[in-house]
Image 1 (tube, rainbow, N blue to C red):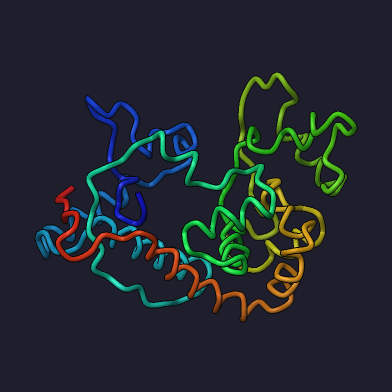
Image 2 (spheres, rainbow, N blue to C red; image 1 turned 180 degrees about the vertical axis):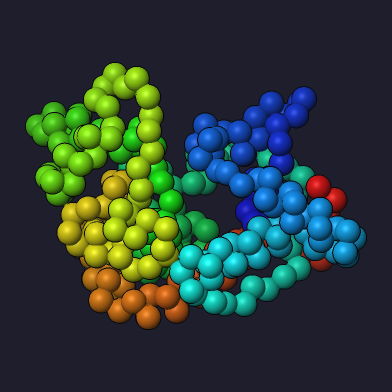
Length: 252
């Protein structure tokens, strides 16, 4: 539903699975209580003025500043939507097994360019992924190869030590980018060049000729990447927003 805070809406009778409760988002998305606390404090100071959608955009901006030292201004004025349908998630979010062409197409449908897609993928320099999102690259890649040949062999062995073979008895998490896992930086692109992209959708950015030069540019020009990242975050935060008299400003 776009940048209208719809991902914050909980499931309820009549809508048994909202966006946040789709299997793609739950339990991956976290921190709802942080946004709720921010909303409560803002409502106390300035009732029904700042939308939940704006709070999400501001929280993203502040998080980028805190973990990456990248600062940018965020336009405000978003309104909150009242529709959140879990069944719409799969068709609107790029998956961890997407190819570069599929990623370009997915982002293009939201008005973002291929270069913006590659730039925003740098957000994977922080955070974690469940083993289930990439374990096929370790154990059952294709009919001709058990292991993904685009994956560095020593890195693959490290991952196998953390992710059980099928059938898995658990689904642990590992860092998306192990060298600086809590720092938002361009090390992600260096990892791709070294064939240490965790997800298929990460490594494909370097193995694909259409996006390889973008990866190399970001890897070797950290300051330029940071500037592009800030601009792309603003662009992404404007996707299908509700403004004016559309939507509402929710109290919770």
